[in-house]
Image (cartoon, rainbow, N blue to C red):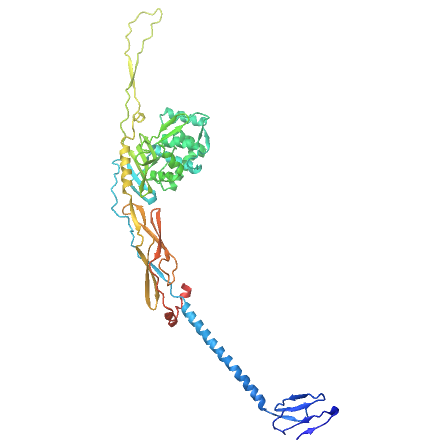
Length: 530
């Protein structure tokens, strides 16, 4: 049914209804302007006109279906992306999961003992003897030792104490020291006792080095006294320092009562003497002074070192000493040079026999006693002439001079030094390219190994039969480390001599393939261990 209403302005409204529940038709509305408006009815809705539309129209269903069709491709694409991302994450976790760490193993092929049998050293037949090679940590002695007088070897301790209290660089003069009246009094006393001295005068100024040179090369007792008082204030205070040094070195047979060793109560043993000598030789100024074959001093000019061996046969020091109680005592040092490397050797002998002293002709003094003349007026008497009295003066044997107190000491100490030097030999501790061990990686139920080697060669000096110690430190190596990768280093040591040798892989440490990693569960506790 159609209704047309002219309405105002000649325009009419037209309404078409399909009846209740019927389809809704498009309705054209004309307004006064002659334009038409199209309105689509909705099922069950009402139009702008008088008619009302039905519900569930076919146009709405078509639009909803179209929207649903357009949404499905995006859903599928999202699912695919999630699947691909999850798979990639899972694969990445498997591929990058840590494996059990590689483990280095040491299989030492280098020497662990210096080859050869220990030599039999030519020990002195009398007295004591000892040797030490400080850098090798090696020492030996002739037999059981006891404390004996050591004469002027005491001055080595005096020098060490002074240089520790007043260190001076090698070649430097050190502070000035003025000779006092007390020094002169001591000098005069020692001169009267025929001790070993060097001329000084009151007010004279000597450097610390000059005084050490006079004491160590010329064995001047008066200079030992002057240095002791200059250092500690009194001789007794200085002796306390000397004994403290001996105790710190473990020199249990040693005890000092003076700074020069003239007093026979200053005692030590051959092994203890070498402990002091080794400390002294480690002080550059001390080593420099005892190596001087001669010395020049203000009042006496140039004089030779009392130790005549200095500068010959490789001898570089150190000191001699003699008294009638101590006998011949001597400490010598020399370098053993092997392939350009120097090794210091020090030997000592104590209590060696000495030649008999020079016996001067006895001095005879004749004394004649004459009777007094008779008193005036006294009767004449017969007087018997008294017999002249002759007195012979002799010098005590211990005070008699010995022309060469070291005549029998020198050959003994020189032979001991030569044998000790010759006994030191080189030992190869690592050969370049030789296998040093393996690095293992465990996966797939199997152990996979790669070899590492010494990247350089090395040797050390040693005493035959002496142990060679080693310590290896490793760096972390992942499976797959390639040939040439640094594994760590091994340090070999004999005493204080050591060599560090780098270690390198010669082949790649095996690692599993990507396919193996994808198929196997990663190590559950490797993260905490890697």
